[in-house]
Length: 268
Ligand code: ATP
Ligand code: MG
Image 1 (cartoon, rainbow, N blue to C red):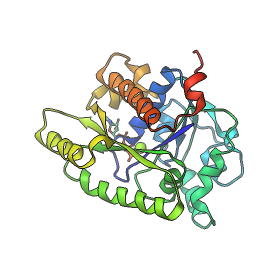
Image 2: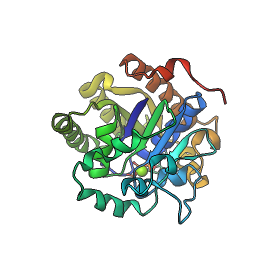
Image 3: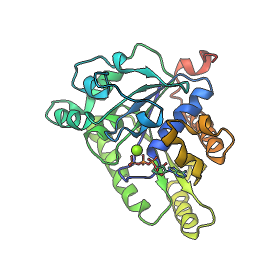
Image 4: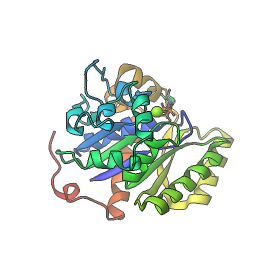
């Protein structure tokens, strides 16, 4: 099982778009995927076509320890499973703040999963809050979407420092793997310059795959669909399929593949 936290405290950089579309692309490659919506904006839940009923078990009840994570898992229409969220997650986050070992809550919940998943993708909030920390504690990989614009690099330094501090303090395994250029517009000089800076500073920790600015990617969530279901042939679809393939290659190269990855793909 490979756990990837899609994270960046900067808002609107493409975290949810990446988490949803990467999940759908990996599912299309016949991997078992669980998406966890760790943001009280619940964009990943809505973008996966789900409407959370009033008494439905969500991630909040799991964090309150009122429910087991298996009770919160639901199937989407797009081949992957999801642990949905709703606005209650804000209060659940506050609740967590007073708990001892709060950093390990998500880790403990994920260890209760009965189903075997090849990939667990976590969509994080635009903050370096306790929810983000719980994700970074349990994740093998941090995928950091970066919009190639002027302030992108500033926030990045802070995020990378936090991740290093966490690794030292909590003895976690998370690796930056890696930085993902999103909403890329190659005609824009600043975009190209920031992209060059990223490559210069972070080398092969930058994904080769670049996610282009693509209006279909912006439209798909309002239909509650990942891009490959909404418009299979657009540039956004090809980009996220390429990203999924690159992610699989990278994780295999790092040797954190689960035995499920080699043998037990399911057809469907
Ligand atoms: P938040 O920090 O609020 O959680 P986020 O980092 O999850 O935001 P998204 O919600 O994925 O960012 O994207 C922000 C906006 O940009 C959304 O309206 C989304 O549809 C749009 N968007 C994301 N990626 C692209 C893209 N490659 N091309 C065009 N629009 C995009
Ligand atoms: Mg988001």
